[in-house]
Image 1 (spheres, rainbow over the protein chains, first blue to last red):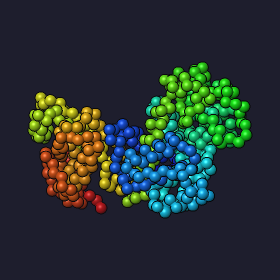
Image 2: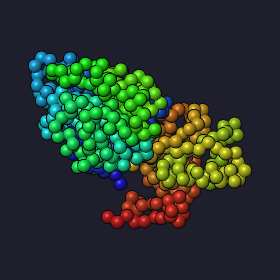
Image 3: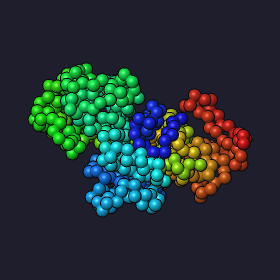
Length: 314
Length: 162
């Protein structure tokens, strides 16, 4: 019944709607395992997953590690400061050496857009993009879609506002592809300095609108997705200061009241409280931020299952 | 068959648990629970296990993931469990189902009931209650059709087209 073609997960852009739906449907099944007293199934016993994280990460790396372990795969974590890249080894050389140890899946996070795709053609292992520069972060978009589905029972026809540092956000790009392929309309909102050329051309044609104020994006929205200001990716001053940013673009209760009364508030983390989101909103009844994190494990289990399993078929 | 299942479990081990193996066994387990209640027996706990993630051949024929939920709401610890499956064949499904149970707790005993036993076991597994025993060969297929799947209730033995 369901199908999943690709050998790697490099982004949402190359996926079909049916493939996105396969992952979402499958992740629903894996959610149940995370509620059991013994949170483990033997499915990927004997498989090896390497998490190669050359950028800081708590949530995503932990989530992939837990996902692998709950499927009984062996998970090995390599982080930037502990890797040979600090000795001058290139990403490709590091990855080829890891590949020589016969992992089944390599999960890679790297500051350079296209890093995962570059490896995908050169390794025997399946490659999962866990974030490449400002390009894509496909499992984040998939877990966001899973969260929206759980609260709204549908994605088609929804109005989704994505607000904040769009320019540096791989989360925004992956979500634009995922949400528009599933039939939602996306409104992007950021100060002009944090927008990028060509954003309106991403996703399904005609499904993306770009605003340089937050209010029109929030009006009547079903879902409000806030993004973190990524100071580490900024060179030079793209906005005056955080207080000014918070005053004009931060999500507080007053601004949230522009959205639909039953709108949900999402954030991929880590939160900058008082900057892009007020604590009253982040801790409020409409925030589903921790639900996103919980679903992340199930989504990554589904991804690992589909990619680590396919290779030994027949 | 439902009464035979009830007789498997001594009074001091009740209430017991009837657990169907998805998907056919789960429907049969529901029916057995209904029949027992109709016959004036106390209602047993009921549940279902999905063994897809526990199969020893999980990746043959992938990608075609069809994973159902496992439902064991009441704790299984210390209870007698009767596993119900529609067709008992190699025994590999039951082996997987027992692994699922082990991940949920430690039942005091696990029994096995199958509507059809078609023989040709590949593991040392024997049923306690059987509806019908049929001698088959590997080239045949046995399918249990059920009203729950909008089919007439029927067991079909067929030569597999090669």
